[in-house]
Length: 236
Image 1 (spheres, rainbow, N blue to C red):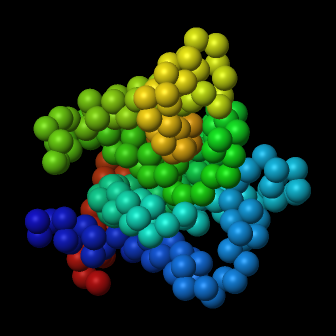
Image 2: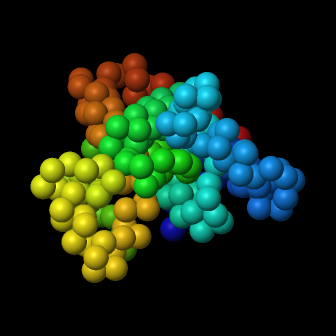
């Protein structure tokens, strides 16, 4: 428990990100941003928005959320995964993970999201990228409260998000979409309101980046730099 608290205390990059997301959503929830619909259309990701020239939405969609529950869920996962990863990798690589997770989620949403989830908001692509980087770098870790290893959790996330993405009736993939239609008829249509394509895209980017980080053994010089960084944090 103390180790986790120390990781949270030192995770400055992660805290800046989470607090920034909270400030942005507070502005939306409290009415500081008056034209909320226009705000979401401008900074959320959608095909229509891109046609209007909102290219910035490839990144900005990850900074806004639909509700407090949406934000809290992502913020909690960011703190759990991000604090530990930041201690291992540092702020620079955390920024890379955030960037590829958001961009990967955006691309897959636009290709496989379907019409029913046209407007995309939330940091889920970033969260999934962080999760898969963690699962790749530390596959034997136990993912409490689930009685499974990080490796198996990562595999499960990839497979489940891919399946849910493909069977989305709005994507209309022959054969797969029929499964989604049957599930919708059974009252499970809300499953396809969630951005599974974004989740899969972010997770896939995290998997590849995690494997790229493990492409070669860590050098003595890198270990010394990591030790120096930890010592500096302890002195703060």
